[in-house]
Length: 176
Picture 1 (cartoon, helix red, strand yellow):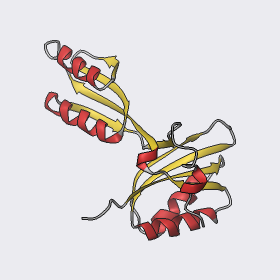
Picture 2: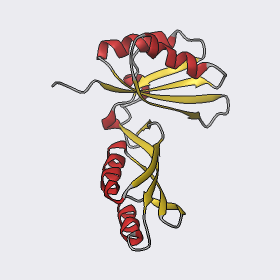
Picture 3: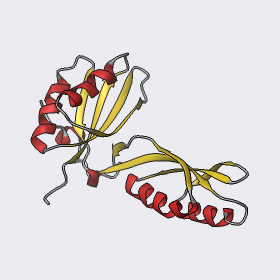
Picture 4: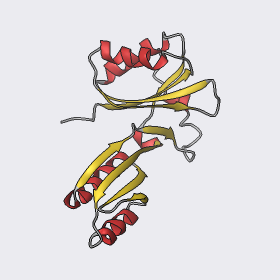
């Protein structure tokens, strides 16, 4: 198959009730499945960033971005290219780990820079912040121990600080 149809969009929005619903609604109306959605405040209390990962054609994502710019509370939208960004998710995972196997699980966690967030009689609750692909690998390696419960946040992405001066948000923006 050709190039990936996954696109990561970052939308800077006014931090107001209903904004997330209106933004997500644009994707729903077009029949797109949102693979990942994360929203959180920025350095300014009156603004939030919505990070959306969607699987669609280039043309479709450009059309959605044009529609996003028409929403009153949307300030800026740009596609975040994987090669110029840092992408992360948080994984909380509870794993079977009796006294005999606990050290094995903890050593594996250490390899992925995960930390033990809680310890139970027969389980460990691990916390790991990493690239989504690396989290998937971590989950695969923990599966044989017995995953009791797992939850991941949505993907967040930010342009690298080391990106060349020419790699600005405005150049990456899909203009509407």
